[in-house]
Structure formats: structure tokens, C-alpha cells
Image (cartoon, rainbow, N blue to C red; front, side):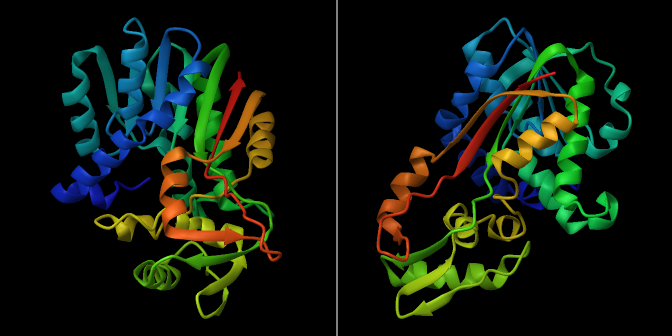
Length: 292
């Protein structure tokens, strides 16, 4: 996993950290799935989740792993010496979990990180080659295998991330011309796959999964170049559950929902209906927990 370029620019780092702080109310949904006292977050970024955990239970022993030194430094400055951080390449750690040299954990968290690993696999498919299987799913299976090896028996894995939408044709009307132009730009610059649509005036007809990528990212500006290179809705709940079963986990709970922050933004930005004119509410996220 290469270091994210946006966090090496002072403005990009500031915007990223602010975005993670804004999302903390929704990230707090995962707290109820954490078990035990030793908790590891893979891809901890600037430490928003670790801060939630620290405030939730000061007695937790917290460990975070990320590749970005700047993000780890930001997290360490915020959380102090009560949290241990490791600068590690997650995919290299998948090959040699013992390198971490830590006792087993009671919970492992992947919060808004799995889609970044999947996006990396999509950009480097030669590193995740398996006949008939998407590189993104291969990468996720490796990450789940790593989590399994780091968990104590019966420990919990908690995943919060984007959700791949089922095949559904929707119609979209933008509520201002500037946002319509942003959609055109996004469609041209989004790299994971080609966005397709049919337009007639201000009415756009397309697959919900195509519009979903725009709807979850259009409000980013400073870090635009990063966001147009990442796929957010890369796996459905059933696909993740199957991967968990393949890596020896027992799925416990699965939730697909829409973040309140996005519901509020979408209400003012565009109208989404099916082909019969019935209002469609897009989900934005999923939470899955499983036991090792």
C-alpha cells in the first residue's frame, strides 16, 4: 500500500483530518461491537476511531497501524502515549503477521480502510492475481486473513466501509447547475471504472452503483485527485460475509444504512427516483462484525 499523497500536503492533511473528525458520530456505531480490552485498528489514519475508543473506555489497550507517518504523527499528538502506533505496510504484514510481535488482540477494526486496500488492488491487479476472482476481493481476503492471525480465539473483527449497490437503474435531477458540472468532471476523471449514463436535459439515467461513487465523493475539493482514484462501493454485504467465512470467521451482524451527514447533503443537492418516479434512498455504508 503506497502512502497517500494527499496527507503530505499541509492543506490536504488538514482537510483529511477535519473530514475524519466530522465522521466520528457515525464511526461511533462500531463501539458496540468491540469486545475485550486489546484493540487493534488496521489503517488507523489520523486516529479518529482510536480517539472514540479511548473516550469510550480509558482502560482499553489500543494499537494502530498505518503506512503514513504524517497521519500516525497526527494521531500520536492527539492521543498521547496511551496508544501504540506502528508504521507498517499492511500487505507486507499479511505475508508475515509475526513481524508485529504483539500478543493476540480481542478486537480488530477496519473502519473506512478496506476500500482503500481494494482500490490499491484495482490499480495493481498483478499483485492480487487469482483466476476468476476480482483483485479487490483477493486483497480483502488477505486483510481478513491477517486479522484472523492477530485475533485471539473468539475475538471480534469489525468492518465499516462503503457498500456495493445491487443492480438498479435510477434517475437523477441536480438541483443546481454547478453540481451538474461537478458530475461531468467526476465522470471524466473517475479512474476505477467508466461511469455510464444517459442524459436528457437535467435528467440523468444510470446504474445506482455508478452514481453512488459520485454521491459519496463530490464534496471533496482539496483531495479530489485522491478520491477520483478510489472505489468506495466495491463489495456487497454478502460478498464480505462470504470472504469472512472463507477466512475462518463466523459473521455475527450486518447493517447497511445511510449516513445522516450524507442524507442531509443529498437532500439539498439532487433528487433520485426510480424509472417510475418513486423516490429512491441510496445506502452509503455497511457495518459487519464477525468472530474468529
